[in-house]
Image (tube, rainbow, N blue to C red; front, side, top):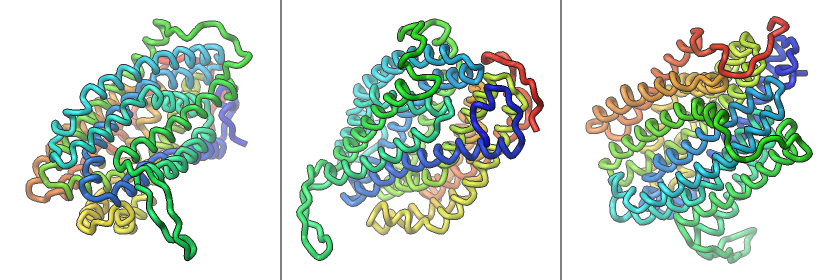
Length: 479
């Protein structure tokens, strides 16, 4: 039976065992990612019932929020990847030391990022070209999320540490629970007190009637609960990382060596993410002049498309764990094999998801908004995007594998170049004549191009260089 411990123990792994371990780590990560995006889907669907203006106020801020969330996530990866390398090399005390230092560093970073978000929360909707009718709601939505970043970054850190330790199940379960809590909180926070028909009887359901603010607050509350549970399990229960009864050499104050390694891993990823989200914001600026319907349809379509590509990110997380621990153990042939296996699995699953998205696009959009014009526009662009999903999967999963070995600079440049040199110019050219469909044609073309260049890099040798992590001999050949 395949197990992650076979990597650090230097055990020979057959192809069947490698495939089984890939699947074993991938499916909980896929469930976790799907539950996360389902939470956003539910938020968008509930807010969509409030009208086009409220939907547009949420849609206007999504790209900016993804930038802030993504920066926090990238920062935590600088510590999580180190843990994967150390556990792969059998150095559990070193992994625990990185965990403790990571908690301190990420809390500080989350607080600084939150302060920046609060400082720009009021003018940001106007900078993005939002109408006066939607700017107030957009500010409230954005401000609620960024204020909670010091806590939310702990969710990212704990989840990343658990996954890099090979534990995909606990983050998966807790993310599903978070989604359920989000539904409950939103149900009571978004809508006012109202009467609903239930089994032939009329029942009065209490509600806070907070609208857009309720949607953000409900999600933040759900994430806080998840972060608390995740940190508890990580620090008290996770094998190899639990701080209970363990070697407590080293404190929570970050050391120069750990910060330097985290800096080398995280900075290219963080810079790439900021630039990438800057491009997304630029796309928002291109879409904004097309009107409220286009803004709302674009936001809903992005959320709906996420149901298709989030399995790829789940498999990408598995690739980071498998390649990271194999690299830390010095088993370089196994690193390459896991890179190939996870990428192929991601492309296969996202191809199936793309077919489902193409066929079910009208249904997906009708769930999110009762406005026929918005749903129709969203359906058209989702069907355009479906053709790019297999190659998008290649870029997502290969990137995860590269991150696992600490190779982040060149992939970051590839992502940056692809979106700024292909997507943005094409969108600017096509939007005036083809409207929102032109923007999504540009997106599909760019994602296809990005997948091709990541596959070409994966076939090469430059990304797999010894010396980035503690190494151990590879005593047995991989089959």
